[in-house]
Image 1 (cartoon, rainbow, N blue to C red):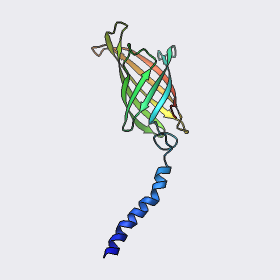
Image 2: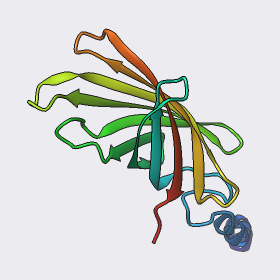
Image 3: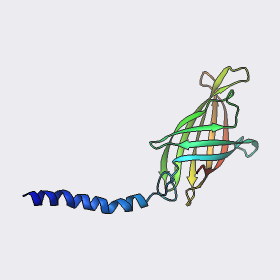
Image 4: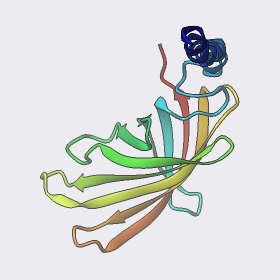
Length: 161
């Protein structure tokens, strides 16, 4: 009786231990499986345009995609003019991910002027170390009135050790 109990406990445990290297080996240390996971921190280069292709400005930033679908962003825009962005992300297809970020805007006198919503898609390349994609930026006043719609293109590289 004892031997049957031991065998019934040990058999599944042995199978689980045998599968552990397969499961661990499937990840690449970059927050997911090789060739497409977006989780982690990224250095970005963003080009903002008027949606007709006329460049308004380019700037650097960082995006951090957290497990569970939340994200944070920061840019080289002075922090007195814009709060850090907070948002959400989800996997759409293959190596493509949708995201949406909200940041609060201020003028040079520290007066709240509204918010921006940035929404887009990013595709991670097969190495898992580069990504790129388009976005739309909608700028609202404090009452929620849409003031402007802009377009953006972003590229990024994984910020790694």
